[in-house]
Amino acid sequence: MNERQTRVLTRIDPTRTAGLEIGPLDRPLVTREMGPVAYVDRATTAQLRQHYEGDPGVNAEQIVDVDFVHGNRPLVESVGRADFDYVVASHTVEHVPDVVGWLRQVAGVLRVGGILSLVIPDKRFTFDYLRPTSSPSEMVDAHFWTSSRPTFRQVFEGLAVSVDLDLDKAWSGSLDIRELAFRHTEEAALNFARRAMEGEYVDAHCWVFTPQSFFDALRFFIRMDLFDYRVVSFIDTPRAELEFYVALEKLPPTSGQIRRQSDQLASIPVQEQPERRNRVLPHLGLDDTDGLQEVCADRDEAREELERALAELAEERRFGLRRWAIEHPWSDRLRLALPQRWGLLDRAMKDRW
Image (cartoon, rainbow, N blue to C red; front, side, top):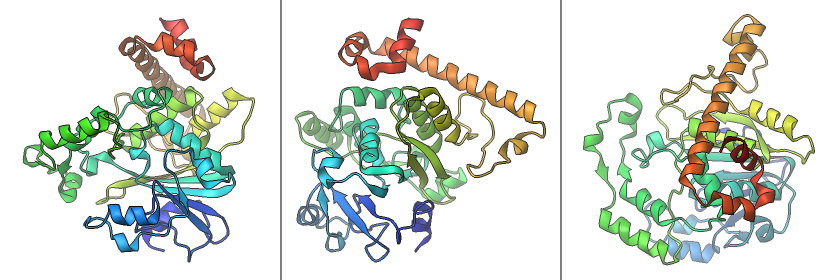
């Protein structure tokens, strides 16, 4: 295995478990020689090879034989089973119009304790450099509207703001944004966005992440009871590279929602990022049982520091919910239409507004 495969399979033994890889194209992370693995994609092998013929970024002849065609069907219907030991998805989650729903669909094909291993582009080192990170409320909005296609805004912004980026300069901090070259003209981006508005599926990066913004989104999903996993592994973007790695473990259903959410939140690594608005604790290793002792020698002081950090995150969430309600005057109608899915946000709206 190469280093990238090793990172993806940190919590997975492909020789002893049955897996599913989503959208492998010509570069599967798990090959059939490594163990029992099936491939699912949006189209058949022949259709994919025809689509990517002449594309310099994909060797069309090397595209793997697709076992299941996803199309517009739910994932569990496409693969016909719900007992995979793991699912691997590289550079996929950012393309999904309904990321919350997609994560739940993947949970639907995993056994309890199964692993979803994600490879996610870090926008600070990709052509999305100039785009703002996606907010959790945008993703929840797309979920409640059951979005199935990239929107006009996502397609236009994804193309019009896309730039050619020098990775070395981005890492060294010597990047001059005035020298960045745009990949597409605004006219071309507008043309593709109009096609999306007319019903054509135009692929785009619907969401833009950094490790910090991704975990902020997970916290939001957890508090709204829209997340079926806990984090079991995280590898930050390696130096001179452009992607980070997250492994999620599917949790069993439980009636103890408060305890479940507490465990889920505790599994998320706390990071210290320059762009972070609120003060947070330094990073704690997921497998480091003595992590709190590294923050400070005294356990009581560490606990108080953690509680203060969590209080700040809770205040940030309340601010985000207030802003969400102001920007979405239709939220009351949506609440009435989907009372069983509204959960925490519904209660927060009643309490706060």
